[in-house]
Amino acid sequence: MNVTKYEKQVEALSPQTLFTGQQLLWLPECPSTNTEAHQLAVQNRATDGCCVITDKQTAGRGQRGNQWEAAPGENLTMSVVWKPVFLPAADQFLLSQAVALAVHDWLSSLLGPDSQLRVKWPNDLFFGNQKLGGILIENTLSGTKIQHSIVGIGININQRQFAVPTATSLASITNHSYVVPVLVARLLESLERRYLQLRGGRIGGLRTEYLRVLYRFQEEHEYEAHGQRLRGQIVGVDEAGRLALATTNGLRYFDLKEIKYLL
Image (cartoon, rainbow, N blue to C red; front, side, top):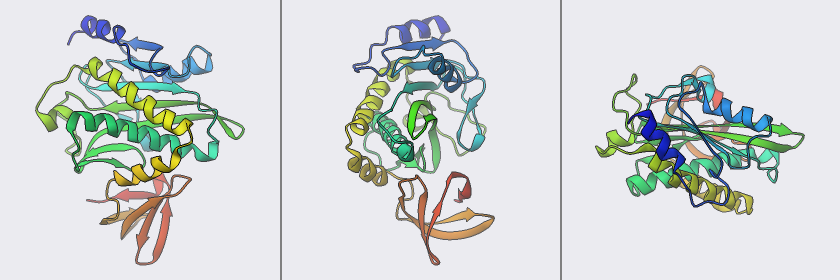
């Protein structure tokens, strides 16, 4: 798809939302949509729900400081600015759960209720044992409150060739091609539904549904933690967002950089 056609399609988007995506900025190319969105937020140029989307991201960031690579024009790379001042900083993992569920909802609408579609803690999207997409949320705090959140989302859509065998895409799964901008409006709507659920205080449902779609939940698997292999079952996630793993030595909790999944 050429850039001009892509730009026109993005400009024509009109998601059925109250605020998410109502301010939409399309960039032909940028280092990172999260960086661009953050700049808009700190300059007070971003409304609540502002969305930044690009066709080519040259320095996308992922979890653990990794770089997120996406072939230009073939995938979805976007960031949303939210201002969840209602959410205490101590509860910020609830936002991560809401976003992960929103993306899972959206992908389920495209793939159907497939049991292979899962959220890998904390908020990657997996199909089987392959990564379909990732989410990077960067929060700016003001005291005990969240001033603004930058929600970066990268989903592999039409790319068929990857540098690593652990990646996949919608096109690889379904053998169909997709018009990326057409998908964006539906994703923005899904994001706002889950965000409003969070804002409305309906957090019990978020926690329950998150566990229901969690990759490897209550399954016995191998992991590596602090340089040692261990075997256990994921049994939950605590309020701080730490992964709870039941092992032969009892229940243990891990932060993001403290545990590695082994196949």
